[in-house]
Image (cartoon, rainbow over all chains, first blue to last red; front, top):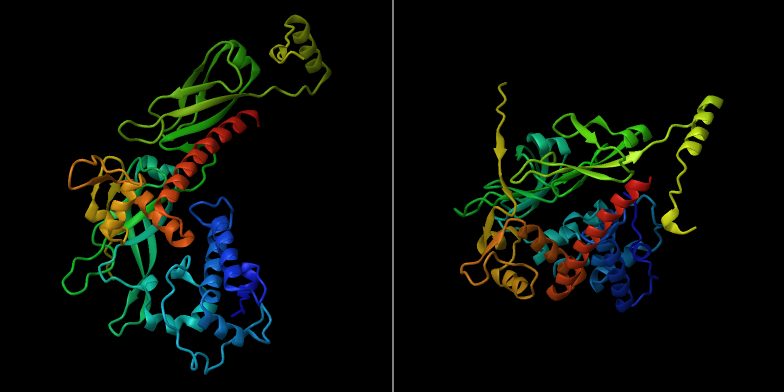
Length: 313
Length: 106
């Protein structure tokens, strides 16, 4: 286990005041909050920051951490002394700390015991509590409907009041046409109810894996379709992939790059079904030989064009 | 050993499903008054605000949970969160448009 430098994580000095620590935390929490942040590693950074703050904002824990940390270098292998925690009694919970459910092993080994017994509001385990999970599926799963397996780690409370992680695997039907961010509710699949209470429900939020071809917005798909200049100029019927298979798209004479066509009902199924948008992209062939070049020159002579006329340059 | 494969089919919470105030309060692990506060701040909208008991569209769950996380982690009040969520929706829309525009010129 590596020693974690909570001061470095928050970017404050060892003698930082409570106010400084709070300001540093707030600033980082805003920057990395997973519901707001576009940073790639937002979730892990946010947890780290939350963990650091949970310790440093609390004078008791901060003192204990400081004593433990004197003489240890960050990143160094570290094992807490066997009598660790004997002289401290941690009051209160960790409520208000970000992502408090999933702190590091380092944190667990230092404060885990205190946490279990104090059972602050942030950790309160309601026996009939509903659970939440996420599942990553492909666009095809949504288009066709599917059955997917989800493995869940659920914290459960043992009869003597200890937290335990229980792993279970569920096979879940993915409803046809489900969209990103939508939630499936599995009644009775949360924590089992205690004292005759009904079991909680499990809510599963769906995310899509990025797709090679399509961009998704709600239930609509969007695809860039490369075509040749002669297909654009003369019109053509070309094959276009859709989630439901290939379809023919009629490109009108004189089509332009960026022109958009709508394939009605070819998006995700539903009432109504989504559409697929096709955006034309004209690809001009590179001239490889003198003959090719001559052909381009001939086009220039035969069909002079100023495509920048509107730009007045 | 025989293996029994149980496949669970859930209910999709979309704009066609409805949740009661009780469902929502259980799923969010908060008291109803917290949700009432969200409605008062315009963060959540019942299907018909004048019709008791309140019903919500299925997608209200996602919004309510996001709001609760933001309040817990950033200590922003619901009025502030309503504004944050509206702005995030707007950014999503702009980013989608941007992607489309960029896609055309690449």
